[in-house]
Image (cartoon, rainbow over all chains, first blue to last red; front, top):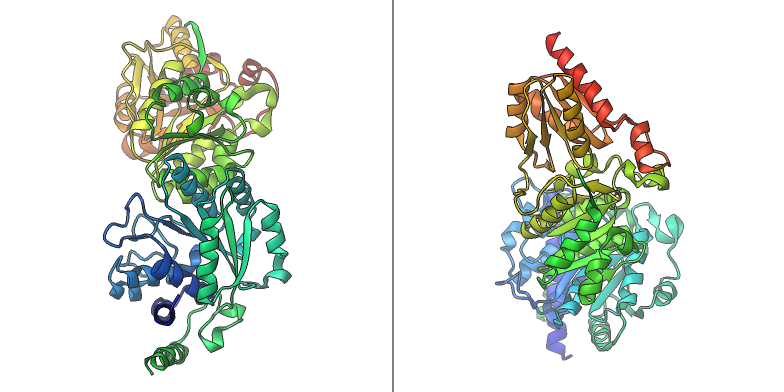
Length: 280
Length: 314
């Protein structure tokens, strides 16, 4: 990957982060921390990797994406709007009564959303189903999913992991957004799922551990996953909750809290500075 | 009435029959021999997926497969389909109105020997409370087959409730017109209407015969589709006979009795008596013994019909 492509991804991820802050600020509700931690993965998926067509969101041969951690909808909506699935002006109506941007993604209302999610643990099962359908039809699309590391405390996730390995779904590529925080605190204090790499490997998956904010590592991991035969791949992305907004980083309290006007302005100034720095 | 096949068996046969449609995919949770989806599996193994003993994953997986244009049938016992996987059915399937048909077998008390843990008496209540869901409870093998075929032809989630036990034959396949949402008047009557669903329909027919010999004219209505319910046939029965008895192999809370009463209180209030499980868990025993113990019999329908007629006079 060349420098200009890298710069593009940096630019998009920063714009996505701005959209995330603006959405959560506008509605004064939503989940900024986990949205920011998966923003770089989302950027690579929608601006470098996935075969999608904003003009034909239900295209049969498209790659699918399931945001299993559905509360991070601001990150998904940001990517979809920036990609052109719907007008960016809609983003500020996030979670409001006259908007189709539900608190958690709905495939019925939002163009580009492949599966309604929000109840943790169910998304990965639906992704399994999509991958299974692809195999039945001999389609060459891939199914991508992002799971939260708190989410994997749901037992259903492990049912889905077991089934995906059993049916050798090498067209299924999942990310674990390993930011180590959930609402009540550190995942290891609340209910430790560790060691996640060994557990997921033991369930029959290929496991790749990367820095989830490093674009080339994300891209390389996806390339490796696509070459895997007979096994689904879990990319464990080591991330920082709240990444990109200084005062939100590594703070569990920003899991589901909206910034006030002053905090919003500081966050936007920080992100604008990143964009400005790229112009030089 | 001649002894026919169990509705679950008719379901399996129907799946094999409609299976030539390449969009049909069948999922089961390690019960394919009991739910009879094995009949489909043997014919179309490439479109049968055994999900193991993991019903929650199965229901959400069904949603994912359906989102790719498939018509998915997901089967397990009613207790697990509606209970264990309730929220997957609600959020992954029904919220997005995905094309998943839940083939729930071994519903109600007639599971028999397996006992209370496996006797679902709440599934109609649970499933009909979810928006976008259609709920069908066939009365015999013929209706079960036609219901399965009809469900495959409509877009959206359907809960199909089947029984373990063989059901007497009520309908002639060559003449019976099955339509989702349309009740069926099995016999006319003017003193009382017995509204039944599933295995209780044959009991209702027997009860009407007994009432006839007591000089009481009872109408019998088969409500195979509990949601959307046929309001017209219920209101008409209330207006013309003035009293209703509902019969179901389900808790009297939230099932057919509840659904019929919801229609009546808003349109034509008349006395209603409910034959069903009186808010108790089931128990082990032979199916017929358990049904008798819980009052799910023609005799009890007769008694309730007489009570309902008495209430008219009050």
